[in-house]
Length: 171
Image 1 (cartoon, rainbow, N blue to C red):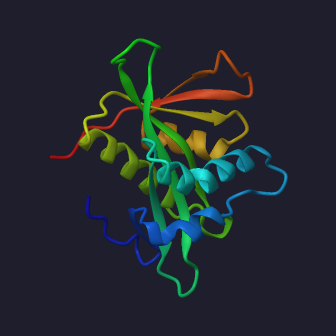
Image 2 (cartoon, rainbow, N blue to C red):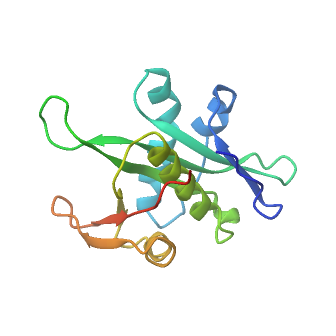
Image 3 (cartoon, rainbow, N blue to C red):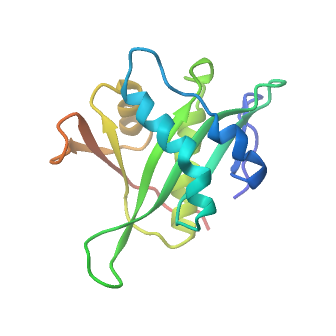
């Protein structure tokens, strides 16, 4: 996929090995919002997951502002459904984070779109699933307004919601 810049704010592109340090030190945690710490933890571990040849994929947003570096990250994979051999998979967003000073500029929307389109292009079909903390109102709003997502309680964790969004692959 070729992504043009986001109105002079950021370039959205696939993770490269040279991004390892920036992703490992990426900070999206918001003081007082403990659920942002979980996303930050997953994002920081992503380079190690990639190095271990797992199915984890990463896209990043690099600011076009001088010396700002990586301002957003999405981590995603094909998640197995069930426990049988040759089991079916579904697109799953493991974490998405944007640095606090770069939020509300469309970076999160573009990162999620990039991940969903990349999965569809690689044949990981079906609606994309993510878990979103009930208190993460900006992410819930993004999913419902931009992706017309279905939101249901997570039966395994009452603090999370299961968000399901569909996107059509681009030929």
